[in-house]
Image (cartoon, rainbow, N blue to C red; front, side):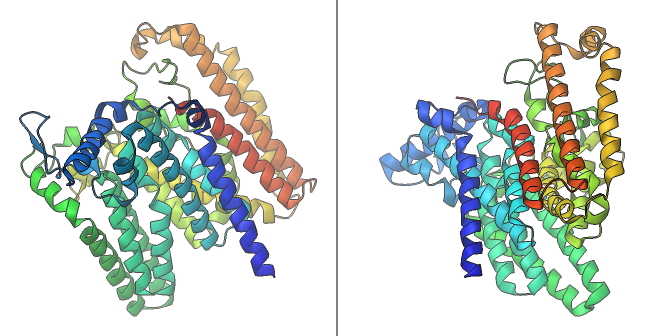
Length: 500
């Protein structure tokens, strides 16, 4: 009876997660309009339309695209994601309609996969729900969705499912989980974004090394060899499943400018500038491309490439529990993975990147900031665990931290506004930031707004933590209050990214 009740509760929260994911797109679904994304319109729409038209009229997948240059091998274009299993809607529906409903399906699946992953890690239902929401609603994913990066969406959502199967294999030791993980990895590769797949494989290798180190301390060499063998099998199966796409892509790549890799300047382009770490707390500090206020440059692509916003409350929650998180073996791993992702995302701003560039794979891609997806994934996982840790903490513990945060947050806005932030800041740097025709007062308003929103979230979190430390909030109420704050925070930031 208890087991049935638990399954019903899980099903209810999974359904709620799916509904929340779908609700993001409600305004477009009900209006009958199409989901917008500049890269989708300029690149993916013609690819998918050509694919559907050719299959409909000739009953076969096109091997050649005669409409680009003097013709080009279409089957070798991995971004067309011809063989991606979940791309079936593009063969059944008009391309713009397929894009909308395929995106909704992927968002719902991504949040569900993350929920299952966190439940497997013995996280509470509330914490798992929160992780699932953050995984799909974070700034990195939503900003790329705004840009119309279809292949990134198709790759990103498989990360938690791959990790679930990999950790199951490394914990239980059953090769069936390594085989299943390889199959899912193959599906991810077929999704059409090889750089995301490369970083996923890198994270699998890091996880394998981490578990091998733990096994060396507890189980000995035999289990280490089993882990390494299973990891090699998983990656081999992933490449084998996707070979139908990888082989023609690799053959064509040898005839391109990327044959043998790219030079360092190109590989390190679009590295995460350290100043953009400020947007992890104040997401619209440099404006937004949605309303044309992005002021760091003449183009807005930097916004989605460098956006790592996972919520202010997320950072606070992880910070106040960091000591306990680091004593949890998977909490420690995700903390290390988040730090590693940030470290690599700095690219040319990283003194060690010239050495990293020489490692296999890193000289094949540009935009080191793309690895931020591992940062937001790690933060989603850490937040679910952190929420459980705070809920289980006895009252009156950690009150000094809450008071410190509250005092700091009360003083910070007074200091900033006494310095005339932000309009005077913009005026002083008007030449440097190249605002062009963008109105300074509008940019100043956006900057003030994002500061006040983040400050409001900080203050709300401090009050909730303080009430919890006083014992004034029951555990369940505290957990869902925290969930609501993070949902409002991320929803406020992410909802405008859904454009029609």
